[in-house]
Amino acid sequence: MSLLVPFDGSELAMNALERASTFGDLLDEEVVVLTVIPDDEEYARDRGWITQGEPFDPEAIAAGMQTRAKEVAPEATVRSERVSSDEPTATSTTNVVREIRRVAGDLEASVVFIGSENAGSVIAPQSSVGSPVANDQRYDVYVVREPGDEGDSADRSDIDSTQSGF
Image 1 (cartoon, rainbow, N blue to C red):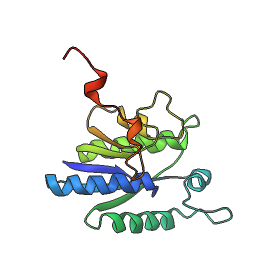
Image 2 (cartoon, rainbow, N blue to C red; image 1 turned 90 degrees about the vertical axis):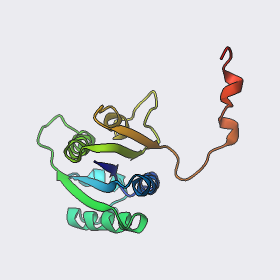
Image 3 (spheres, rainbow, N blue to C red; image 1 turned 60 degrees about the vertical axis):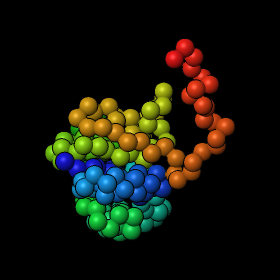
């Protein structure tokens, strides 16, 4: 069994990796970092992997993601997978989700750590992998929603004051 962290280099993904690394140490489980790179230049630009005018180079992106992941969790296993659009109706996000779920199944991941602002929201944006990955019942999901910020204490409620009759 292992802990899987889909990783796109974002602050949320880095925080998810930090948490997975902590859990991995405590549970003595391997942490696997996975970057899925679709053959879509616009997808890479949207995630800040390449800048406007910079050539789309999946190998350079994979190397960059490995460097960033190793800075956060040097002991983690880092892998990247390339996906191509093999069906005309699938989006790059759909292909990324499929690959994350496939790898999670292959690894028999016990927990997938997702850095997502939107996972669990009522409305799931089409560009987020959080909600579709979280829907797989083969593994537990740990969602990191905030990039290292504890949030405003006024946004949290005291469970004792909101429930009665217990």
